[in-house]
Length: 202
Image (tube, rainbow, N blue to C red; front, side, top):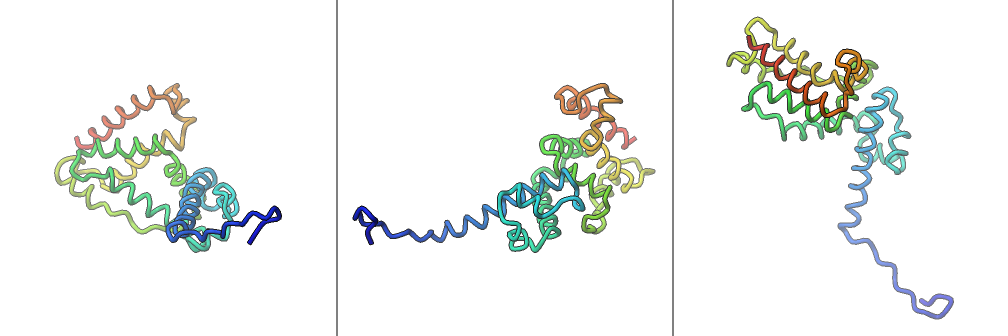
């Protein structure tokens, strides 16, 4: 086949198998990243699939194709968080260091923490099962948590310590007279969290 100037046209190259595989995976990753942003900003109830698709730059039908809908997208983000958690949740390290690892993760990328706060406010996200507190009970038996403290109460306190500077920046400014995103505040706050966690053992 020739073009209008008589130059032979090259036949259109069919995409290689790895290219065909890459495109769906790329759109999937774009949707997950966009969902992190939108869920963090608007919560589960306020997030619209069109908003997520627009931010990802893809057709919203791909959300149903890849995840079966908004709830499936939410659950996939939960699975990704669990994989990420495995990289720093080490049961062998002291409890205060473990809580600080969660705090550093929240400081580094606050989107999951913001979304978790939204879940408690709009009560619309899919229900999760009871939290496994066996590690905290083990740590309590080993003396890292005082005997008269309910491990469930300890867990709620740890979550609150990690969540507070992200979900309540106005409270940080009011109580600490500090910028919640400043390195100075974060260093001071981390040290205070360490002390609080250690005091729970006494």
